[in-house]
Image (cartoon, rainbow, N blue to C red; front, side, top):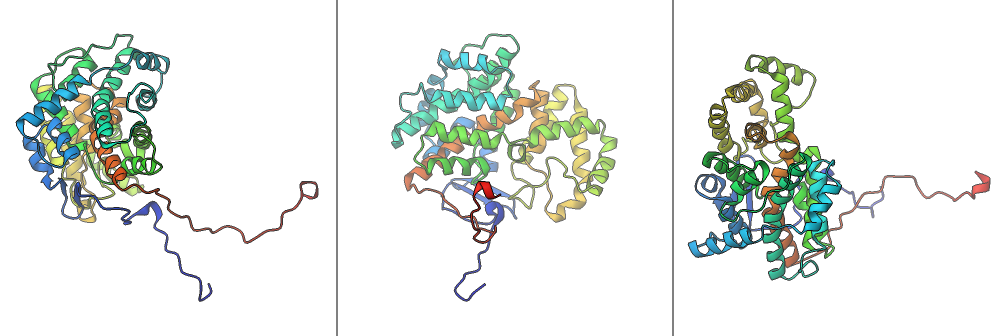
Length: 380
């Protein structure tokens, strides 16, 4: 390297790199803290609803009673899918639910009256519609693949209860609806994760909201980002009995294999979202008469205690998969449920990118061959 050459430092995966500023989501990985607009996730999980949390994310302040009523009503009014979207779902019915969801959200751009309008007012209207339409797509696909008709929207139910109703055809219990509502709150926003960053990159090209959300769904579909809840359920089935947990952990660690639901790219302490689902798993497993699932998770936590000092702690997905299973939800819907909760967070990231938009264009350091002479085809 000559004196005029500058040493290039590469940050693989952009780890530790700040590409912008945001007033929304505070994450302290060492302390295990998460806040939305300054409000602790613990307070929101205990006292709020998904509708109120979504309002907070999108507007920056908690709503008044009148504002929350209007916001909630707007979400309920947006519960409709064009017939053509239902036909598209029927056409791709055999696809994975994440692939179907991505396809349907992309297709919705052709039917939204504000698709090409990137004004703040239009983006907010599209956000409200997609927040309501995404769970309807997931539920409609699940019904159709079972040979059943999609269930008509019911404006009397809250967001979480309505999703469970459209999924099963039965009004959920208050506890089941609250637990799903809590899950949506905990997954609503999480800073510059892979899917949110993807949404910002696409927005940076001046693409519309539907394009950016479609890209975010594609990023979430990768198992390294959204697949942990499904993997935890597979792991719990493999262990089978709490007595097997310690040996399972010992074998996996000896082979340098990950234990699903432990560790996080950001958190060194326990994921602050996890504790709120821990209690839910315990209650729901007893209610459903399947306490062994909760016992397996508790045994795993105990077996993993020696690794907590290394920053390998429970994350939110450790408990969510078992909650979905206890509610009778198939494993291939676990990631789509993550997407349902994340729509407001993705939309918020898109709006903030639009406020002072810039094309996101990082560089790659070249480490290939030096200049080479082209050899004509007939001489090779």
